[in-house]
Image (tube, rainbow, N blue to C red; front, side):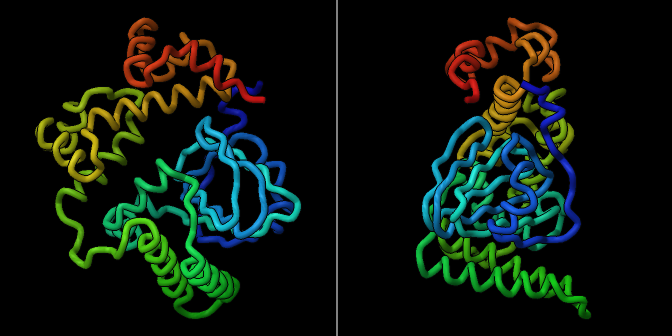
Length: 287
């Protein structure tokens, strides 16, 4: 098994892309069949056919009219059948640009948490037609070199996100993003950047200029879980990735995640995941 760093991929896309699965089989099949990761949001829509997608150590069987979303930095691999039809949509930088309308749509609708925790989502037929039509116009506009192309592409992305939000969480609220949403978003971004070096809520609260109690309460109101839960889950997720996709031993993984004491890491993993690190690794050996 190769080291995690050599099979992972974390490059950036500058513009949105819409590709068919037929194109993927002809151009990037081998790349997608090995575990890798991106710095952008990727939507895989299976219109018809079969296959498997592995996302962060979990295997999902593909079904007709099902949506699979890969959020930034999720480790994944994809195996699709020869006759499977569908699309891959790449949406770059949506989660990192403050003030971006698309980011607000993701957070206001609750779509982002749904995508991150439930990647296989069944699409209603009516919504599927709307999504396919939107992807058609988005792809067509991307192939042009016209005035205001970027602005038009942005509008089609907005429409796509709204269609998805309607499907999974109902209509998007009309009120603007409030301070709590803004704080939660900044907290998520900070955890993604510093989870290896910061394990305590108070460390993030100090950086965000709020109290620990306030940060915990706000994140719980937005996501249903306190800030401490989010931090622990993010650390354990990275440990699970390393356990499955690398040959590093527990001591090396613990050190890479900022733990100087292996026993502390072991206890941290067990208390968060419910099983020991060793038991997890035995159960999740890749075929």
